[in-house]
Image (cartoon, rainbow, N blue to C red; front, side):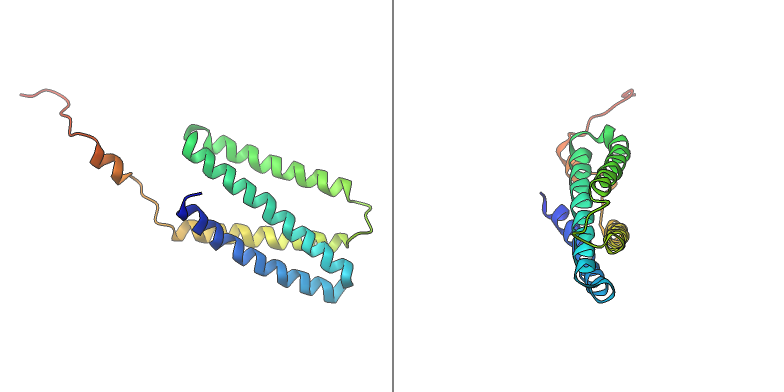
Length: 145
């Protein structure tokens, strides 16, 4: 992973983890130990899904840029389907509090998206690749008259 990608991931994951810790603490106070476990599971799941999604999108942008937008749409649908499967499998669980899980998941997802938007706005992204311009020879096109 290039350093700029790692820096972006750090700018996104740290606030999300901090919000997750806060939601775990609040859920622990409100719903007890099972609430804290539910919020922790929701936060970890959101960070895992969003982190994998970010990695896949960055890989797609570098290797197959023509598929970037379609891959983004497919990825978000896949994330929602995986989350739906997870919720369906654990809907009657007594391992954690379902409301605390949902709250932790939503808080972590919203913070991730806000931090990702902020990181993208702060990033210095070139519109033109300066290295490619320097390496190409100056070729004349058109008529020479």
